[in-house]
Length: 203
Image (cartoon, rainbow, N blue to C red; front, side, top):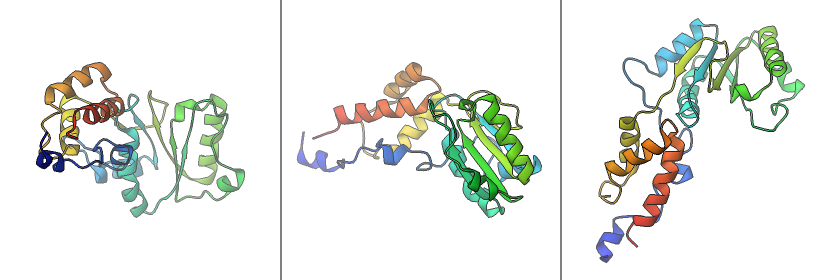
């Protein structure tokens, strides 16, 4: 491998965690849907809604794309992430006491909460006049704001966006084969692209 060719590719892998974490890449909408229209819909629904989609399909990325516009609309965002095997959200009664009519409570992984926790959270939001926006894999009863989905074409477009312009050692066929293995889970596809890049890049 020539020294000139090695210089074309930096040591930083374009599929590193920093490059693909939620918020690093803006969510890609299709059709007439966009940030402004979704925030307007959320407002019309009294700031209550859910972003629904399979694991790794861009829910967190969409959420982070929406947040600046939500805050610009005058909402104070209080965000929490539900995690497996944790009995409760990392929030205190003192935090809940600060919620008010301009607060938007955002919960990622809402379905990990049990029914009692969900009802308690919903009641706390209603008592404070706060909105509630969640991400989930299956509908949870709030108005559906957006349903995320990954296609092979979208996956290919994102990979091409991340790759250096002169990269010729990851092909469209590689991406499509990975998509067939991982389907809607774009996160796993990008992890596989990381490994493939590391194995094939000039050294």
